[in-house]
Image 1: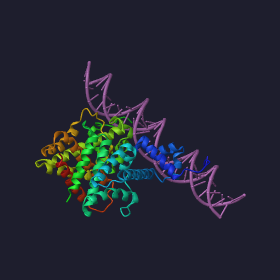
Image 2: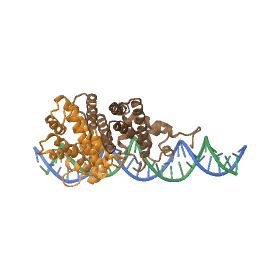
Image 3: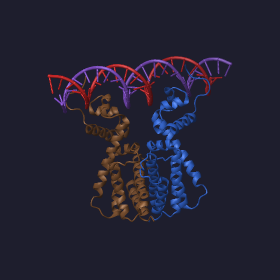
Image 4: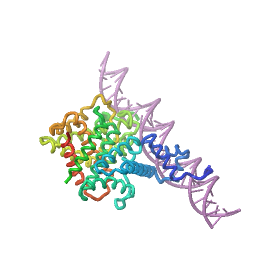
Length: 192
Length: 192
DNA sequence: ACCATAAACTAATACCATTCGTTATTTTGG
DNA sequence: CCAAAATAACGAATGGTATTAGTTTATGGT
């Protein structure tokens, strides 16, 4: 058959289709074939745009991180009180994850491939979002990395356990999250 | 060919082989074919032992939970101080997850299928392990579910972020975990 | 207008899960 | 003790996936 008329697919179009697949079918539904189907091309043609299925998943996950960081930035814009910033960040992650379950699930599976030497800007931004309020809270520089990891981990774990239905008891999950965030902030704020 | 001589494979043998595959090749390596290979039978014969690949994964994940709960039980055996129990539980989960990465990764993906009505004994045991020290700390009954979820989530999230290499900064991860656990215990212990 | 490149195609390979029908062994009930 | 039933293996077939190789054709630059 050869090439069809009109300009070929742009990287952005491929990424958009892949994101749509993930949002619609979940992280498991992402693959060379499903995205090819969504684009109306044959699976083999996908290799003109990505080098492998794994690379495709990595790109979509990176796009998810970009979107999450954007959502968090606008969530804390204009807020000055550090504890309130942390609260907004925590709830911002959970809200985004609930609204973008497929994407968040993919981001959790795919591990970044960048060597620990150079941290990409988007990851830097994510770190800074948490680092700033922690600094304003008076957490010493060398403790902040521990505090950041603690907060990220706690929020991440909560979202994943919630998404995979592992909170069995019939207590309000939203209330549990509020409780958890307040407890975390208390714990971090009282660090030496 | 028909059946081979001798007794057929027991459910325990199939499970053992599946666990070995997961431990050796990771959660992604688990499948009808890989376990059949490990057992020396053809993939089609696997369906005499499991109903589907998904069911196989669920069984292995359940076995993982059983083993984790056993490890935690023996970790806190004889310890009376509640904060020390929580510390041991947290570090017990992380240590087990590090030592059984494939199994823990699988447990994180597979969501249990039991209806929220009847909670299996092993899940009950896991809840109780955390519930007891929280009660001894004086956390009110109606707050304990929130506290339990917070602790589980924080530990779970830390382990997953660590396993997927998302802690980029070159600070000591073990030190971060210790810091996180102390912060969590402080936060929970000061709950109203 | 020409040519190189980009981007689609077809075809082929190699996995994987699953189902079906068949066969041989083991177990069980009369 | 033997025949019938249940069990557990098989081969073959179907349909899904990722991937590679070679081919064709439209587009964009010189």
